[in-house]
Amino acid sequence: MARLFGDSMILKNIERSVAAAAFSGLAGMAQAVSDMPGGPKVLQLNLGEPASAIARGQIFIHDVLLWVCLVIFVLVFGVMFYSIFAHRKSKGHKPADFHESTSVEIAWTIVPFIIVVALGAVATGDVVAQKDTSNSDLTIKATGYQWKWGYDYLKGEGEGISMLSMLATPREQIEDRNYPDARAKREKNVTYLMEVDNPLVVPVGKKVRIITTANDVIHAWMVPALGVKQDAIPGFVRDTWFKAEKTGIFRGQCAELCGKDHAFMPIVVEVKSEADYKTWVDGKKKEMLAKQDDPAKEWPVADLQARGEKIYAANCVACHQPTGKGVPGAFPALDGSKVVLGPQDAQIDLLLQGQGRYRDGLVQAALRYRTGCGPDLHPQCLVQQGRRQHRAAQGSPRCPAQIIRRLPVPFHRAPVRLSEFRQEQINECSTRSPR
View 1 (cartoon, rainbow, N blue to C red):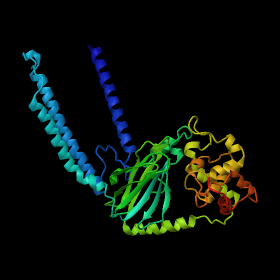
View 2: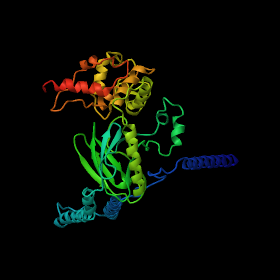
View 3: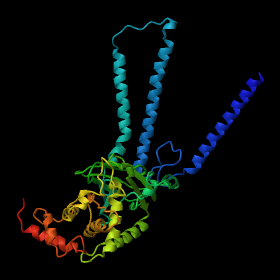
View 4: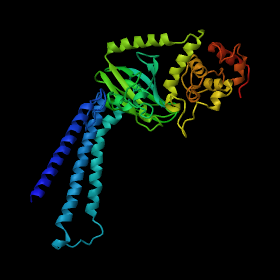
């Protein structure tokens, strides 16, 4: 008896220890995790706090549908369980023998119809309002790329501003296999994978029209707090709108599976007061003007190498990796590649005829990084992301790579004025007939 009593005491002590450890662990997790500014909150069970009338309407429709579904669930399963219990065989009930019931069929047709019509009446106003993009104060084009967003301010205050918005979380917090302390670093970052280098900035209380499209695959521009979710489809133009009711930062993500780094494509919208927005517009335009490349400038080799490294880190490292080893089976390695180590003319031609938004200085810097940096890396992904606009008017064909050889100095060994090179290409193309 004493032995049994002793064993039970031991079990109780073990239970208390396990419970205390579990409680302390949960308490530690609660202390380690904090609310994300402009994003989800700890232990959030419902939808986030709305920041626009459209988002507030969407939450209202969601709540109405949830209650309607709950009532239907209780009624249907209540009748079903009552029938099973009250008419069970042990009480002597026998199953009814009939094939159809006109009244029942009419009821289960009319009742769902009434429910659907009622729900449609509740939702129609908000659905129609979501599609009304007329009379906007500001129009912005959002272009989806793998894996970043491009923003062009097309109409309204800020017209002419253009920028790329990319993930700002450093790779040192993401890649555990390359950085042993990555987990410790990301646990301290409350906006991990939800931060960007250039957020979309808009004024409060203004109707902002967002025109969406894509450069490669289907993306989706979604910011839940603003009630916005619109697909961005290559070759198509879609639009949506929002009007923020308060200042602050609101976060979202690409909501369409778009490839390897789909999870690394956040969206950040910063809503400013009207005065602060004007200040931002003035500062952004001055910044863009200061960053414009002088077409006549001859870049020193060291500057081009440093700039090329930044271009590679911003546009190529996600696929080809910081080491240039690539991802086996998905993205080719640049380190030791025959293309990289082969004739330079072909590489220059690929850089100039890729797809994307790269100015002359960026192309020259990327090429200089390949030819001058330590590991023999080359931003080959510019082939897909950096289409160079060097066609002549009237649909003239692209110039062949052989034109590169006509340069006065080797293109890959000395600084070159790309504006002169491009003009030579255009002049050469303009003398030929279209294909």
